[in-house]
Length: 242
Image: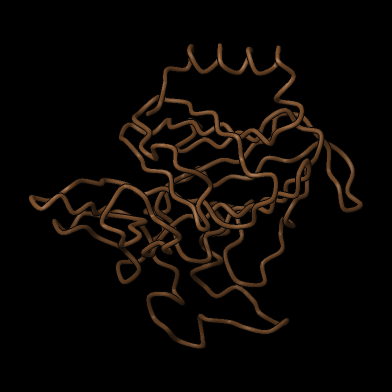
């Protein structure tokens, strides 16, 4: 279960004193949303309890080598038969653990490639949006020929403001819970670009206007996928305060 920020700070200090942090890839997952979220990954990153109540911070030691996506599930509950489902990001497992199952769309994806002390990262709205998020390395510097500090990437705006009605994802009560990409919703070549000449469509361009640091279509490389090393932690904040 998630612990308080104070107890987790004490844990981090003890790890620093023991010299562990310098050898491990440490992720901080902070939930600033006013509701609980359930962290998910494909492939799995461990067996920790994925539920994060509001205003909690979790410290997670990531695998030495790992490539995959993270996302969060929202508005989750058990039915009368104890079948676990979520309004967004549901992975169909029927439990709180996803077991490598992909998420139901739309979903905000956080993509990472970890190779010991080097972490590549990007934020993707290619399959829609279900929650604001920020990826912010603490310290470190770029690799792969880059220079300077490891940049922050985020999408902190509410895309419901630009989501047309036919892309709106709703719960069983008809309430907005996320925004589909045009490709996933319409299944049309006009919006499902491929090849090296892939360009944003009208709707992905609208996503880009609000979330310029996220990738919004398959060949989007602005900004690039950053590679970072020498950092203290990778800080991931859900519903970051603007």
